[in-house]
Length: 488
Image (cartoon, rainbow, N blue to C red):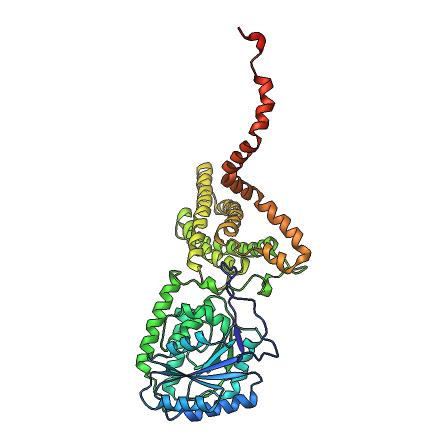
């Protein structure tokens, strides 16, 4: 089994609760709500629902519900579904007057009160023994979403070469264009926690087959954990899916989502977990944290970046002048340095705001370019024709100065800490509350005092004058009253 996690380093808006295991005695509402979207499936619907219900009764230890979501069927599917719902209290039927698998899932999942939501195709191509491994990480609070994968190494799949080629090609496109790390976006066997669905689904636009892919891409970019389960899967030769139209719609969806991610149009910070939910937030004895950890990471990245820069400069210098060689060497190494520091030093994961961070990194690069180019110009003016070793020595010194400035700018401007660690510690670590409160107050006292004084100065002056006017008049009157001896 494979798990991917790309938690962002900072959360600017906490809307999801901390991950938690569902209580063992949960009986208020069904723990699991399995949606079966159908369109004109009068033949297969009955046998499949009965088979699924029998499997859940025998093997699933929690209360469950099976919801049939009818996508505007025109055959006898509504009558069959209504009969199944009437025959079992564990089966519900919902009719939608518009087609679209994504539309059906959004409608049912949004209205469900179950803490874990799932769906599977009506043909039950996926072996049902994978159902409990699929939802177990969501029930335990370990993961946010779970998917069945036909492309995992231990999966056992029976299908024709045409569908195999299309599936693998599509997932390669996702990896190349959207940098997806999950292995199978199209398998009709997925689950999601209810609290995650409530925040994630409003961000998903597609109402058709691309719904799954868009949901997974957004979840991964937001740093949610996606659990993958290898499945046994047998292709349904009677599938009614139109491959060409589905593939075309999927490619349009890939373009739309890729463009939205590139321009930062998606508010993925809504899917942030609270500070402390990630074990990497914790402070451990003997493990560098905060500024110390960042300095260690930055020094390592800086040393490697400097070597990389010197190699590039030496390579460019063989066929061009020093100034021309310095600029591209510094530019390439700056892009690599920003990317490495983003991930390794400041712990920012995922690609959200990556372009913005690189743009800010280029501003820092421009400052470094000015320092190094200025040092080369000063060296040239002082010695006329310096040797290559002298140039390198001067550049190393200039780069050290630029490195210190780079760290300060990266920490304070490019990757500022967005979470209030003080508030977290006050809530979760009473032993350190006083220390954090003192540190936080010391850091912000001057700012708060200035802001507060500016906002309330006039009010205090007026109140003070009104309260003490009489007293001050009485005190000052004897001192400043006219001397009778001076009267004429």
